[in-house]
Length: 382
Image 1 (cartoon, rainbow, N blue to C red):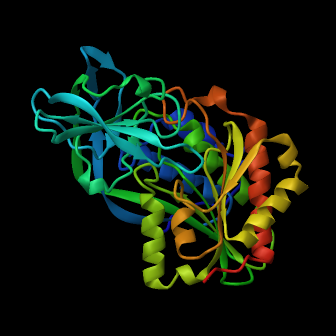
Image 2: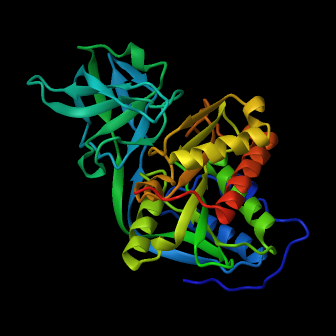
Protein backbone atom coordinates (compact mmCIF):
# COMPACT_ATOMS: atom_id res chain seq x y z
CA UNK A 1 0.00 0.00 0.00
CA UNK A 2 1.61 3.25 -1.16
CA UNK A 3 1.02 6.47 0.76
CA UNK A 4 0.88 9.72 -1.11
CA UNK A 5 0.80 13.25 0.19
CA UNK A 6 2.42 16.65 -0.10
CA UNK A 7 6.16 16.67 -0.70
CA UNK A 8 7.51 19.29 1.64
CA UNK A 9 10.10 19.87 4.31
CA UNK A 10 9.14 21.18 7.73
CA UNK A 11 11.11 24.16 8.99
CA UNK A 12 11.52 22.08 12.15
CA UNK A 13 11.73 18.38 11.18
CA UNK A 14 9.63 15.92 13.12
CA UNK A 15 11.59 14.09 15.82
CA UNK A 16 10.45 10.47 15.81
CA UNK A 17 12.23 9.87 19.11
CA UNK A 18 9.68 12.13 20.81
CA UNK A 19 6.69 11.06 18.72
CA UNK A 20 7.19 7.33 19.28
CA UNK A 21 8.75 7.42 22.75
CA UNK A 22 6.63 10.13 24.40
CA UNK A 23 3.50 10.91 22.40
CA UNK A 24 2.64 7.30 21.53
CA UNK A 25 4.61 5.36 24.15
CA UNK A 26 4.21 1.60 24.45
CA UNK A 27 3.48 0.17 21.00
CA UNK A 28 3.32 -3.60 21.11
CA UNK A 29 3.07 -5.41 17.81
CA UNK A 30 -0.46 -5.57 16.48
CA UNK A 31 -1.87 -2.78 18.66
CA UNK A 32 -3.44 0.54 17.62
CA UNK A 33 -0.36 2.27 19.08
CA UNK A 34 1.89 0.34 16.69
CA UNK A 35 -0.35 1.43 13.82
CA UNK A 36 -0.04 5.06 14.94
CA UNK A 37 3.74 4.67 15.00
CA UNK A 38 3.78 3.31 11.45
CA UNK A 39 1.65 6.23 10.30
CA UNK A 40 3.98 8.73 11.99
CA UNK A 41 7.04 7.18 10.32
CA UNK A 42 5.33 7.22 6.91
CA UNK A 43 4.48 10.89 7.43
CA UNK A 44 8.11 11.67 8.32
CA UNK A 45 9.27 9.96 5.11
CA UNK A 46 6.72 11.94 3.11
CA UNK A 47 8.00 15.18 4.55
CA UNK A 48 11.47 14.29 3.28
CA UNK A 49 10.11 13.95 -0.24
CA UNK A 50 10.03 10.14 -0.23
CA UNK A 51 7.06 7.96 -1.20
CA UNK A 52 6.52 5.48 1.62
CA UNK A 53 4.49 2.30 1.37
CA UNK A 54 3.18 -0.21 3.87
CA UNK A 55 4.08 -3.85 3.33
CA UNK A 56 1.43 -5.61 5.40
CA UNK A 57 1.36 -9.10 6.86
CA UNK A 58 -1.02 -11.00 9.16
CA UNK A 59 -0.05 -11.45 12.79
CA UNK A 60 -1.22 -13.68 15.60
CA UNK A 61 -1.38 -11.12 18.39
CA UNK A 62 -0.74 -11.74 22.07
CA UNK A 63 -2.08 -9.56 24.87
CA UNK A 64 -0.22 -10.33 28.09
CA UNK A 65 -1.56 -9.84 31.58
CA UNK A 66 0.41 -9.25 34.77
CA UNK A 67 1.95 -12.59 35.81
CA UNK A 68 2.12 -13.67 39.45
CA UNK A 69 5.03 -15.71 40.79
CA UNK A 70 5.04 -16.82 44.44
CA UNK A 71 8.12 -18.59 45.83
CA UNK A 72 8.02 -19.96 49.40
CA UNK A 73 5.06 -17.70 50.11
CA UNK A 74 6.75 -14.53 48.77
CA UNK A 75 5.44 -12.60 45.76
CA UNK A 76 8.28 -11.98 43.28
CA UNK A 77 8.55 -9.46 40.48
CA UNK A 78 7.98 -11.27 37.20
CA UNK A 79 7.88 -10.24 33.57
CA UNK A 80 5.69 -12.00 31.01
CA UNK A 81 7.12 -14.38 28.46
CA UNK A 82 5.62 -13.42 25.11
CA UNK A 83 3.21 -16.03 23.71
CA UNK A 84 3.31 -17.92 27.02
CA UNK A 85 0.20 -20.03 27.46
CA UNK A 86 -2.08 -18.90 30.27
CA UNK A 87 -2.53 -21.03 33.35
CA UNK A 88 -5.99 -22.15 34.44
CA UNK A 89 -7.89 -21.32 37.59
CA UNK A 90 -5.41 -20.77 40.43
CA UNK A 91 -2.29 -21.34 38.35
CA UNK A 92 0.23 -24.15 38.62
CA UNK A 93 1.94 -25.14 41.86
CA UNK A 94 4.90 -27.38 42.55
CA UNK A 95 8.57 -27.19 43.44
CA UNK A 96 11.46 -25.52 41.69
CA UNK A 97 14.08 -27.52 39.84
CA UNK A 98 17.00 -26.03 38.00
CA UNK A 99 17.05 -27.73 34.59
CA UNK A 100 19.96 -25.97 32.93
CA UNK A 101 21.13 -22.82 31.24
CA UNK A 102 20.31 -21.12 27.98
CA UNK A 103 22.66 -19.11 25.85
CA UNK A 104 21.49 -15.52 25.95
CA UNK A 105 22.18 -12.75 23.49
CA UNK A 106 25.72 -12.64 22.14
CA UNK A 107 28.26 -11.21 24.52
CA UNK A 108 26.29 -12.21 27.60
CA UNK A 109 26.86 -15.26 29.79
CA UNK A 110 24.39 -18.15 29.85
CA UNK A 111 21.43 -17.67 32.18
CA UNK A 112 19.60 -20.09 34.44
CA UNK A 113 16.37 -21.87 33.55
CA UNK A 114 14.16 -23.35 36.24
CA UNK A 115 11.10 -25.56 35.98
CA UNK A 116 8.18 -25.74 38.33
CA UNK A 117 7.59 -29.49 38.58
CA UNK A 118 4.83 -31.60 40.09
CA UNK A 119 5.33 -34.48 42.51
CA UNK A 120 6.14 -36.80 39.57
CA UNK A 121 8.82 -34.45 38.26
CA UNK A 122 6.83 -33.34 35.21
CA UNK A 123 7.33 -29.76 34.05
CA UNK A 124 4.40 -27.44 34.73
CA UNK A 125 6.00 -24.09 33.93
CA UNK A 126 9.35 -22.34 33.35
CA UNK A 127 11.13 -19.50 35.15
CA UNK A 128 13.82 -17.74 33.11
CA UNK A 129 16.57 -15.45 34.34
CA UNK A 130 16.81 -12.08 32.59
CA UNK A 131 19.06 -12.88 29.58
CA UNK A 132 20.76 -9.45 29.58
CA UNK A 133 20.86 -7.99 33.08
CA UNK A 134 18.49 -5.95 35.19
CA UNK A 135 14.84 -6.27 36.15
CA UNK A 136 12.04 -8.74 35.55
CA UNK A 137 11.57 -7.84 31.90
CA UNK A 138 9.07 -8.98 29.30
CA UNK A 139 10.92 -11.03 26.71
CA UNK A 140 10.49 -13.79 24.18
CA UNK A 141 11.24 -17.40 24.87
CA UNK A 142 14.49 -18.65 23.40
CA UNK A 143 12.71 -21.80 22.29
CA UNK A 144 10.14 -22.24 19.51
CA UNK A 145 7.26 -19.82 20.02
CA UNK A 146 4.62 -22.47 19.43
CA UNK A 147 5.92 -24.67 22.25
CA UNK A 148 5.99 -22.06 25.03
CA UNK A 149 4.03 -23.17 28.07
CA UNK A 150 3.41 -20.97 31.13
CA UNK A 151 6.63 -18.99 31.70
CA UNK A 152 8.01 -15.78 33.22
CA UNK A 153 11.28 -13.87 33.55
CA UNK A 154 12.84 -12.84 36.86
CA UNK A 155 15.51 -10.24 37.51
CA UNK A 156 19.25 -10.73 37.54
CA UNK A 157 19.27 -10.06 41.29
CA UNK A 158 16.43 -12.47 42.08
CA UNK A 159 17.64 -15.40 39.97
CA UNK A 160 20.41 -16.47 42.40
CA UNK A 161 17.80 -16.68 45.16
CA UNK A 162 15.97 -19.50 43.42
CA UNK A 163 16.75 -22.91 44.91
CA UNK A 164 15.90 -26.52 44.24
CA UNK A 165 12.93 -27.73 46.23
CA UNK A 166 11.42 -24.31 46.94
CA UNK A 167 7.64 -24.22 46.64
CA UNK A 168 6.40 -22.15 43.72
CA UNK A 169 3.08 -21.06 42.24
CA UNK A 170 2.82 -19.34 38.88
CA UNK A 171 -0.21 -17.66 37.37
CA UNK A 172 0.09 -16.37 33.83
CA UNK A 173 -2.60 -14.69 31.82
CA UNK A 174 -2.82 -13.64 28.23
CA UNK A 175 -4.80 -14.21 25.09
CA UNK A 176 -3.95 -15.01 21.52
CA UNK A 177 -5.61 -12.65 19.06
CA UNK A 178 -6.03 -13.67 15.45
CA UNK A 179 -6.78 -11.37 12.53
CA UNK A 180 -4.33 -8.61 13.35
CA UNK A 181 -2.32 -6.86 10.65
CA UNK A 182 1.19 -5.47 10.99
CA UNK A 183 3.07 -3.22 8.60
CA UNK A 184 6.67 -2.68 7.62
CA UNK A 185 7.13 0.91 6.43
CA UNK A 186 9.30 1.12 3.30
CA UNK A 187 10.53 4.17 1.36
CA UNK A 188 13.04 4.14 -1.49
CA UNK A 189 15.50 6.79 -2.59
CA UNK A 190 16.33 5.96 -6.20
CA UNK A 191 19.96 5.97 -7.25
CA UNK A 192 21.78 5.38 -10.52
CA UNK A 193 21.51 1.60 -10.05
CA UNK A 194 18.75 -0.80 -9.06
CA UNK A 195 21.16 -2.29 -6.55
CA UNK A 196 20.24 -1.03 -3.10
CA UNK A 197 21.46 -0.61 0.47
CA UNK A 198 18.85 -1.13 3.19
CA UNK A 199 18.84 1.29 6.15
CA UNK A 200 16.54 0.03 8.90
CA UNK A 201 15.27 0.06 12.48
CA UNK A 202 12.29 -1.49 14.24
CA UNK A 203 9.51 0.66 15.68
CA UNK A 204 7.59 -1.63 18.04
CA UNK A 205 8.20 -1.84 21.78
CA UNK A 206 7.55 -4.35 24.55
CA UNK A 207 4.69 -4.81 27.02
CA UNK A 208 4.31 -1.61 29.05
CA UNK A 209 7.60 -0.30 27.69
CA UNK A 210 7.65 3.16 26.09
CA UNK A 211 10.60 2.01 23.99
CA UNK A 212 12.41 5.35 23.93
CA UNK A 213 15.83 3.78 23.49
CA UNK A 214 14.55 0.46 22.11
CA UNK A 215 13.86 1.57 19.53
CA UNK A 216 12.45 5.04 18.94
CA UNK A 217 16.10 6.11 18.95
CA UNK A 218 16.91 3.81 16.03
CA UNK A 219 13.89 4.98 14.02
CA UNK A 220 14.90 8.61 14.53
CA UNK A 221 18.39 7.61 13.44
CA UNK A 222 17.02 6.24 10.16
CA UNK A 223 15.06 9.47 9.63
CA UNK A 224 18.22 11.53 10.17
CA UNK A 225 20.18 9.41 7.71
CA UNK A 226 17.41 9.84 5.15
CA UNK A 227 17.48 13.59 5.75
CA UNK A 228 21.21 13.62 4.97
CA UNK A 229 20.90 11.54 1.80
CA UNK A 230 17.76 13.01 0.19
CA UNK A 231 18.48 15.54 -2.54
CA UNK A 232 21.84 14.01 -3.48
CA UNK A 233 22.75 11.64 -6.28
CA UNK A 234 23.94 8.16 -5.35
CA UNK A 235 25.45 5.32 -7.40
CA UNK A 236 22.96 2.88 -5.89
CA UNK A 237 19.50 3.13 -4.38
CA UNK A 238 18.71 3.36 -0.68
CA UNK A 239 15.73 1.56 0.86
CA UNK A 240 14.64 2.89 4.25
CA UNK A 241 12.66 0.39 6.32
CA UNK A 242 10.94 0.65 9.70
CA UNK A 243 10.28 -2.92 10.78
CA UNK A 244 7.25 -4.06 12.74
CA UNK A 245 7.13 -6.82 15.37
CA UNK A 246 10.85 -7.10 16.14
CA UNK A 247 10.29 -7.61 19.84
CA UNK A 248 8.39 -10.86 19.36
CA UNK A 249 11.15 -12.58 17.42
CA UNK A 250 12.28 -10.36 14.49
CA UNK A 251 8.97 -11.13 12.80
CA UNK A 252 8.77 -8.05 10.55
CA UNK A 253 12.26 -8.39 9.11
CA UNK A 254 11.94 -12.18 8.80
CA UNK A 255 8.73 -11.77 6.83
CA UNK A 256 10.18 -9.09 4.55
CA UNK A 257 13.34 -11.06 3.74
CA UNK A 258 11.31 -14.20 3.06
CA UNK A 259 8.78 -12.33 0.90
CA UNK A 260 11.38 -10.36 -1.05
CA UNK A 261 13.38 -13.52 -1.69
CA UNK A 262 10.24 -15.25 -2.97
CA UNK A 263 9.52 -12.35 -5.33
CA UNK A 264 13.13 -11.97 -6.49
CA UNK A 265 13.45 -8.51 -4.90
CA UNK A 266 16.11 -9.53 -2.39
CA UNK A 267 18.66 -9.89 -5.20
CA UNK A 268 18.84 -6.08 -5.38
CA UNK A 269 20.08 -5.72 -1.81
CA UNK A 270 23.87 -5.42 -1.57
CA UNK A 271 24.12 -4.36 2.07
CA UNK A 272 22.21 -3.59 5.25
CA UNK A 273 22.83 -1.00 7.97
CA UNK A 274 20.47 -1.42 10.93
CA UNK A 275 20.11 0.79 14.01
CA UNK A 276 18.86 -0.42 17.40
CA UNK A 277 19.19 1.19 20.85
CA UNK A 278 21.52 4.00 19.77
CA UNK A 279 20.95 6.73 22.38
CA UNK A 280 21.97 5.07 25.68
CA UNK A 281 24.09 2.15 26.79
CA UNK A 282 27.45 1.04 28.13
CA UNK A 283 29.30 0.14 24.93
CA UNK A 284 29.27 0.95 21.24
CA UNK A 285 28.43 -2.43 19.76
CA UNK A 286 28.58 -3.64 16.19
CA UNK A 287 27.02 -6.88 15.02
CA UNK A 288 28.65 -7.22 11.63
CA UNK A 289 29.74 -9.62 8.92
CA UNK A 290 31.38 -10.74 6.76
CA UNK A 291 35.02 -9.89 7.56
CA UNK A 292 35.26 -7.35 4.73
CA UNK A 293 32.41 -5.29 6.15
CA UNK A 294 33.80 -5.74 9.65
CA UNK A 295 37.07 -4.15 8.57
CA UNK A 296 35.21 -1.30 6.86
CA UNK A 297 33.19 -0.68 10.03
CA UNK A 298 36.31 -0.66 12.23
CA UNK A 299 38.02 1.77 9.87
CA UNK A 300 35.02 4.13 9.95
CA UNK A 301 34.89 3.94 13.76
CA UNK A 302 38.55 4.94 13.87
CA UNK A 303 38.14 7.73 11.31
CA UNK A 304 35.34 9.25 13.40
CA UNK A 305 37.28 8.83 16.66
CA UNK A 306 34.60 6.59 18.13
CA UNK A 307 37.08 3.89 19.10
CA UNK A 308 38.65 6.41 21.48
CA UNK A 309 35.38 7.89 22.74
CA UNK A 310 33.69 4.59 23.58
CA UNK A 311 34.45 1.14 24.84
CA UNK A 312 33.31 -1.07 22.00
CA UNK A 313 32.49 -4.65 21.13
CA UNK A 314 32.43 -6.10 17.64
CA UNK A 315 30.80 -9.48 17.10
CA UNK A 316 29.49 -11.50 14.19
CA UNK A 317 26.09 -10.93 12.59
CA UNK A 318 24.26 -12.99 15.20
CA UNK A 319 20.58 -12.95 15.96
CA UNK A 320 19.22 -10.25 18.24
CA UNK A 321 18.03 -7.57 15.86
CA UNK A 322 16.83 -6.98 12.32
CA UNK A 323 20.04 -7.37 10.33
CA UNK A 324 20.02 -11.09 11.09
CA UNK A 325 17.83 -12.58 8.36
CA UNK A 326 19.63 -10.54 5.71
CA UNK A 327 22.93 -11.92 7.00
CA UNK A 328 21.47 -15.43 6.80
CA UNK A 329 21.04 -14.79 3.06
CA UNK A 330 24.78 -13.95 2.84
CA UNK A 331 24.12 -10.21 2.46
CA UNK A 332 26.74 -8.01 4.20
CA UNK A 333 24.96 -6.58 7.23
CA UNK A 334 25.75 -4.51 10.28
CA UNK A 335 23.74 -3.38 13.28
CA UNK A 336 24.88 -0.34 15.26
CA UNK A 337 23.95 -0.21 18.96
CA UNK A 338 24.89 1.30 22.30
CA UNK A 339 24.29 -1.63 24.62
CA UNK A 340 23.58 -2.95 27.25
CA UNK A 341 21.79 -0.79 29.82
CA UNK A 342 19.90 -1.41 33.06
CA UNK A 343 16.56 -0.01 31.92
CA UNK A 344 16.29 -2.31 28.90
CA UNK A 345 12.67 -3.39 28.26
CA UNK A 346 11.41 -1.70 31.42
CA UNK A 347 8.88 1.13 31.93
CA UNK A 348 11.79 3.25 33.22
CA UNK A 349 13.21 3.49 29.68
CA UNK A 350 12.26 7.15 29.22
CA UNK A 351 13.40 10.33 27.51
CA UNK A 352 15.74 11.44 30.30
CA UNK A 353 18.04 8.53 29.38
CA UNK A 354 18.70 9.88 25.89
CA UNK A 355 22.32 10.83 25.27
CA UNK A 356 22.32 13.15 22.26
CA UNK A 357 26.05 12.60 21.66
CA UNK A 358 25.63 8.83 21.47
CA UNK A 359 22.67 9.22 19.14
CA UNK A 360 24.51 11.56 16.80
CA UNK A 361 27.68 9.45 16.84
CA UNK A 362 25.69 6.35 15.93
CA UNK A 363 24.04 8.24 13.08
CA UNK A 364 27.44 9.49 11.86
CA UNK A 365 28.84 5.95 11.88
CA UNK A 366 25.77 4.46 10.21
CA UNK A 367 25.76 7.17 7.54
CA UNK A 368 29.42 6.51 6.79
CA UNK A 369 28.71 2.80 6.44
CA UNK A 370 25.75 3.46 4.14
CA UNK A 371 27.76 5.80 1.94
CA UNK A 372 30.62 3.29 1.72
CA UNK A 373 28.21 0.51 0.79
CA UNK A 374 26.60 2.72 -1.83
CA UNK A 375 29.98 3.41 -3.42
CA UNK A 376 31.82 0.12 -2.87
CA UNK A 377 29.63 -2.56 -1.38
CA UNK A 378 31.27 -5.42 0.45
CA UNK A 379 31.07 -8.68 -1.43
CA UNK A 380 28.27 -11.08 -0.64
CA UNK A 381 29.48 -14.34 0.87
CA UNK A 382 28.76 -17.66 -0.78
